[in-house]
Image (cartoon, rainbow over all chains, first blue to last red; front, side, top):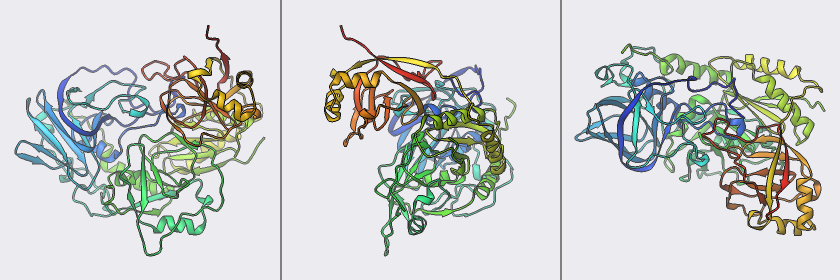
Length: 356
Length: 218
């Protein structure tokens, strides 16, 4: 079968833009994949949406460069990458838990910087996050598979980056010098800011990245499968991310407490497999929550106690294993959507294209 | 069969529409009928039909929760007993047993059947693809003859080869790509179920009617 024709595709029907070679992967540890906004329309065939683990950092990386909003970026997870520029260009790096080195200079995240042909740029892991997004002026040109450039390794859709890979990019939408030296926090776009819910980090006013976040969730379709004590245990406990996390799912470990609690079930019953989204929190037999992430299977058979709201997915995505202390708080769909609207109005979704 | 349908949010960008709580052909037919009706709602990004439910992904910037619920409920009201979608019919060649079907003999022994009886009971029925999930292109098909019902393997295999035809519970399925698997492998089909670079990447679609055809090895 072919794609659902009503599905919002991430790419225009027939885009034929010229591209040219821009950077080479000179060194790499960890996993680096190309991701765009995600692959929509194929979930019903068992293909996950994929796309960025931290959609906010991904969007900001492209926004900073005046790229089309679904332009492909490199997503780097728990590793380091060294890129060699093969021509002059401008890069942006966003996310959390990384720093950018270029010879003697260190660039902060959430900025853009000019690189000359021949220069090497190293994105190195620090602490305080898991995922970085590297965007190039114009956006990367990589193969489009089932309407998207997002990589889904388990399904063999796209491939991870390797040392020696040469990447291409489309033409920038503005003069390179205009795109360089931008700072996401400095209000360079002179756009309205979202309310500061928790102004705990210096990185950005829009997304309060933290290793001790309170993640808002909507009660799940099987919340009534759990006892009142079980529900209370879920919301009153603190969790950290288990080190065995990946793009498919985040296993959470309940942190020790003076009165350990269990997320107890009212009854034992098999759930008939049904669809899930990124952010769905399943409680399997061992009682430890698993949060579905970007490459999670499209359907599942464990009860879902809650679902992380879209606005808080980036916060959860950047929680470090063993270090983070995560709490969940219940909210309503209406409140969650208001929060998302506020971020959207703050121009993270803007598609301003400067004349070339 | 008209159980009450329920709409529950799955986060702030999706709604789970549960039409019932069973694996049943008539209920699944309603699921696919509703899935087809939902495609005309503009704010819907995509839908995921399953055995007894449809997950509706919508764009929260294009609609409100109340509006999308109303649109969905309106479509549910259009469902009736005669709502029918034509299904495609596919025949799937299968090499049963041997290296292609390592569980054929053990499963037959557990079920008290001869291997050829097991093959006959598996291949003489027509199955409906209830849903797809688990991996790209994996079809969940039913319903098996009740003489073939087995629980999943107590220890899943770390790697099941692509094309493996398998059974578990009252379901039968085919693994489209190499993956771990806990179902009993009866045989293998040479057909490609999933090719991401093809214009039509999937052999199956939810709602298809499928028949397995045993192949002789000369």
